[in-house]
Length: 592
Image 1: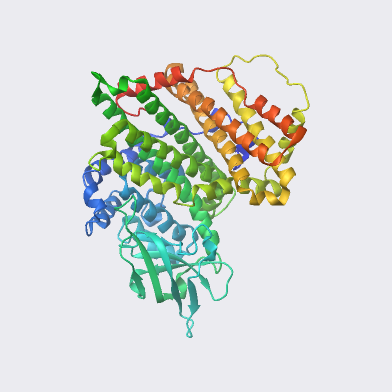
Image 2: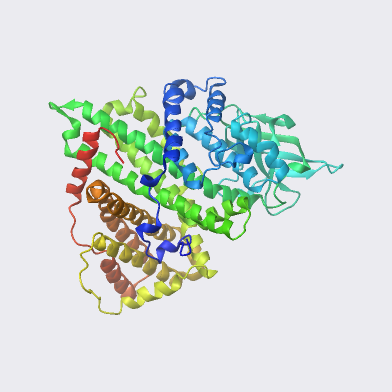
């Protein structure tokens, strides 16, 4: 699209429902791919969860082999390497479908994402021809070695070293990596190390058979017990010079760009997991009888079901909206003559802000769903014999995977401000306009009675609240803002809630236009619930930020502005939740 939105631009620009993609628009082929994944989970994974968690010898690699035979490992791999060559949003749909597979989902996503994509996107033709076909079929399993004992969020501080041997034929790798997913059965490792005294990391493709690789026993983890997680030691591991990936010192850039993909794919996986958890909770609430009634008849339980479903709907809307933005950006770059692999990376990098938001909001949405799932099950929820216990434990890692949620919140604001400073986004112009608006009499204008007009006005005002806070923080704190993490996280919360709320609203509006108001009734209720509950959260985050750096008349004026920008006509959220709960209970599943 010539008028395609840029990454992060949603903060200052209104988006039309016509310019977004919603899950209801997936074609039949994509739906068949999704169903294949769901059928695989039912037939091969969900009936073996105890065996998977016990890490039965050979079971996980065997499941990966079977998934490879069905093409599940190669959905987004180009056809020339044995894959299906599907677009980014279809690969999101696969991550979503597999997301309900607990530890298996972790193993598969680590292999298809951070294990395979560095070679696909950064490898030369010889490297891609050698490795990608075998990774696509599952003949070889992949792992990704970045984290070290003293290098977690600060990945570039890793100490693993690479030295060229005297003959100039091999690099000798020495170092320790930890929390390495799939390590116990991987054939190929993507390893990051520093050559000599380099400032930045370099990436290498290391085969298990190169030698010099030892491992600690499997880690004992809180959750995802069935996924292989080990410390990996490299002891003079000889790596042929032709296995250096990309260019020297390009490793940190590779890690960052691959993590952008990992973040949004993790968001998609949590959507699939939440869908399964919410459906289980609905079914149990219909079966469990107390006081001669199914507990689904009680308002407190109905609240939990509706709220979890609403958060899922909103976050699902945001994830596939961003996925399509990435596909649109890719198509535009290809049309401009860019190489396919570079275009894939550039398109995801363009929406790195949205990827970080989706990672944070989706992982926290799942945490809410599993927590309330345990509560709905009551005492049985705490039993290891009931399904919620595993879901509760497994969900917790998602707020740490692919960069902690704290780091990702900081990244959201950091990337926005950097793009503004580079002139890629005009944030300060709109921020100054909002500040000027505080000095003027509000223009109430004529009332717009068009569908969703009131909600769109709320979204526009919530964006103004974010611009007001961010603009004031930049002006007041300047260079010291980067050290004020609490304020930055307040701003990130405003931005994130706006993005997800707007996504839900646009989805409901598109359903109304394409399928009619009756079909849009439930989505509209969920979009409005999410929006109206987000108003209070944005108000609180705005006030907390302003109170921490402004004072006197300046503070009072800005607080008046926040009250204005977070004002909305009353909406009966309780009744809307009851309508959502009624539909969920009647369908006996999450039905969107």
